[in-house]
Image (tube, rainbow, N blue to C red; front, side, top):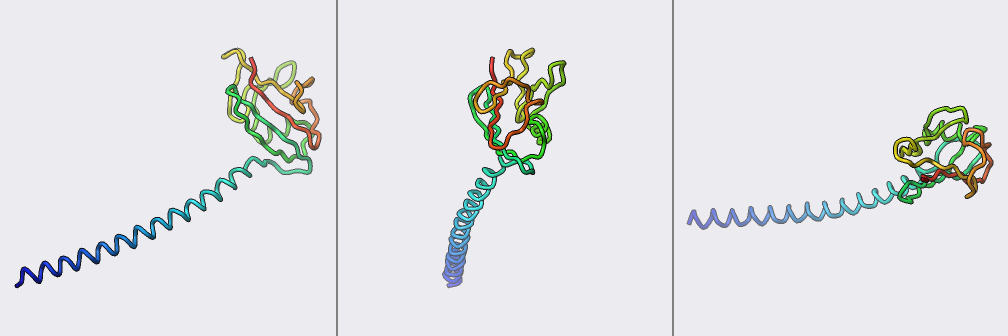
Length: 150
């Protein structure tokens, strides 16, 4: 008789544990959906993270790596030259030479002709630039880009 009562109590306990486990699973799934929504919102925010800087003048800046992957930025600045604006935002880095700034790193990607035979080419509105990034004046609405070339 005691054995039967213990089995009945054990069955009741197992049923209650199963119900609690199902409830937690259901809550966990709903929490996963909410975190997915938060992730989607986070992705939307991260898509807007390509808007950089503060200032009255706005221009588009595109980086094309050696594999052809493009990253586009919307830059806001009050700087006079494209080079000043991009340096301020840490989007470019390089070294000064007798010809101006020799850009070796763009958006964290290094291309050094002396090391790997490729370099960063500077473009203004899709055309190969006739001036260096550090002497090219910022023009509202223009697009500037750096592309890895051989």
